[in-house]
Image (cartoon, rainbow, N blue to C red; front, side, top):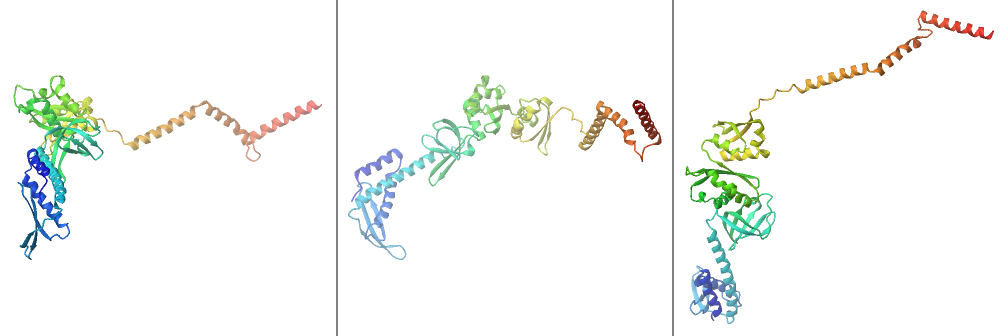
Length: 400
């Protein structure tokens, strides 16, 4: 029995188009046919299969082995219907070898390309990862490597950085990133040819993805302004980078070997008055004008953090305004306020007309209350008696 001519033609086409030698596929097919033979009724426990690459003939040999695994007897035992089994097995082997060849080819194409910039098409998006089509392979971008709050829609064409290429059992796995600082470096290299030819060098990058990136650049040519070359005419070069980053701000600063000047430059657009360095503690105390303090610190301290990452120093920003006097203890202030409030309320009540009238009425009513048989004074009692007698005489004269 022999392999079908169409199968042999397919094997030769694979060798021409995919570079897979026919011998390798035939060896894999022979091993698969041994497994298929052992599943046929009456098959020997051990066997081997020979495939002639020229004619395509297939011969199965049954074997007897001794205790040491040596062949003591061998005979031809090709089943009558083995042609059908061989054809099915050949298809499976060829498909498997095609998959393996594709995986090997993909891994070979992307192995060692860590840090390269690629253009990919979004295929699938969820909260865990995003799947991209690279044309000849698929790539994954974990959620941690995405730009925060960036919306990626299916079919979008975006640029990404190859972060890692892994050779997994199921095939090579290509990991992409859009949040890595080197992604901004690669984007800027696309727009600034001076970075590629070495005229300008990127010395440091500090990035908070989705918000702001600071890049320190140095010119190796005294006739070339590193910062101006990266920004471009009217910001044309850096604007392309910002557009790809979906609006993330990019600040280009001039590198300086003196950390004081570098920190002052990195804290822009704020104007720095003075920088004092503590080399032992790696701390930089920065003094700015009082009205520039919030600008130097940035929103939620972002500007200061990026300057610290760029320079490698912990940045402590202070105002040049004199320190405010220390307030009095809170307990004394509260007592003074309370005492003053009590005195003020007492004076206010005493001076009101209603209180004065009430006091006069009370003063007039006191003698009336003191008119008592037991407690009244002699003078008051005599006056009352005289008034009573006068009233009685008047009544008597009227009766007459």
